[in-house]
Length: 293
Ligand code: C2E
Ligand code: CA
Ligand code: CA
Image 1 (cartoon, rainbow, N blue to C red):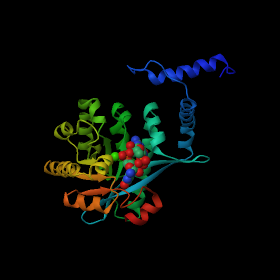
Image 2: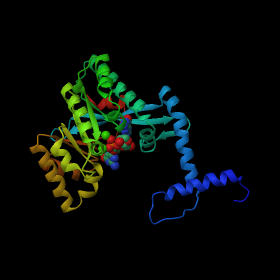
Image 3: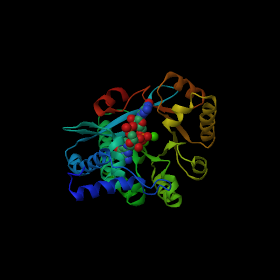
């Protein structure tokens, strides 16, 4: 576009150039408005995130986890939702990766943990039989070693015990610095927190991980279960993964459970807990309270 100022043209050329950086076989690229829009989108999210947290635009949703044998809720996972005043619902698939890049995930996660603790305290005071809430832990928290301190402060502030807050740590984190992670997890476990390996089976280190790391639970990745279960080979892999985990005295959760066929298969495979749309979607707190206790 010859009517554009040269500085704009250069910016756009630079954007296009970035898309081929590191590609051995590609030496040119064309600029496309989508490149600029996605960056503008990201910039908008970054500009708004702090105020959004202040203004309670982030809302914790809870997705219950069910005992496969009894069909009773035995826990729940806290998942963040951004209810934007003008844009409406923004998916975590959009904002979480940005926050994981710029570190804001520390703030959001701590907010999610505190909300979970607050809710648990309220449920206890109301005399409900509370189930543990699982919260997500991100890479940033493992690298900043005040994780235990932050969690224990919350536990004390709301007069809870660590076994009420389970910690989900995604499998890919185990690739980074296994020794460092091991040390952190060991200390958390000694304090009484239950540790869940999230997205188990999605990486290449699953077997090493299950051999070397001391955790309480594995959560078999939803993609894995969903796409593999249809095939006979897939079934065998999932079935034996569950068997192996049980022999190692690990609890097994299957996520992304969407159909009756999934449930029947999991029951036969001796899986302990299931989470997914078949049972319930992630839901706001009042709704969760109606079904969970
Ligand atoms: P995740 O931890 O693996 O969470 C499970 C995701 O699967 C959630 O997506 C949930 O809504 C979705 N899901 C649950 N049941 C089913 C099902 O039966 N079928 C299918 N297809 N999907 C199901 P969501 O809420 O969009 O979250 C996406 C990811 O964003 C999460 O994946 C997690 O990694 C991250 N995330 C969400 N909230 C938080 C948070 O507060 N903190 C951190 N650090 N990460 C979060
Ligand atoms: Ca999770
Ligand atoms: Ca997962």
